[in-house]
Image (cartoon, rainbow, N blue to C red; front, side, top):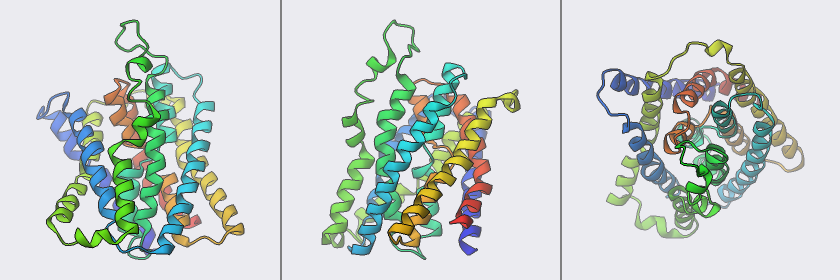
Length: 327
């Protein structure tokens, strides 16, 4: 029960971090491009720092095996989430349909899932953060390939007669996904974890600087959501049928599907409790903050997807603990 209480507290804490973004925008303390700059800072600097620091620990075979299990689960779940999202929202307007699908597939792994697991599970189950980071590798591969494709394919936002997918093809390639700083940080981190290289970094100014940078992930990502929230109108939200389908998928159907798969595999192969909890928490996390950042990056409907992320984050305060209790 202590884990559930800690989980509720940390989800609520992240939600409160949106307030500075709202105040900055309402008080006109930032420009319209400020959100995109913060998004890039989180995606390219803070997240890789968080990823690298988590691997600076002595090698443990049990941690490595459990991490592989979580990695396999992450591939299966992202594929299933993608199929479910593509089958839904067909009647929604194009701009909304893209963001509904994006927010359904991608949960807030890096900005909420990993910080939550580090705060709630790491002390009880050492290595939980590493498991979450391998899950995030799959997340990023899908994000920078399928996610970017959802945002751009078949769309000409700048009305220049050229499909956006062609204009952004370098950003949507599989190579781009594997060469993203977070994926590279995971690969380097694994080397430091498997071999005793971490001893040369632990306790040095290098580690301390990375630790300070990783602390930017949670607050800055929520500030970005707050910036969008300040521009948001909730008028007509209750009439948005797509919103209800999205909530049902992201917070009920897909988490329960993930739980069922994990429990079914657990009947065949004994799984560490940490593997089950990390996998299900990440699957049950609210819509990814990256949805807002990608909307900014690819000129999609950032205000609408911010509404999805905000509502999803609020609902997750209730749904994540309930799902965890089922685990």
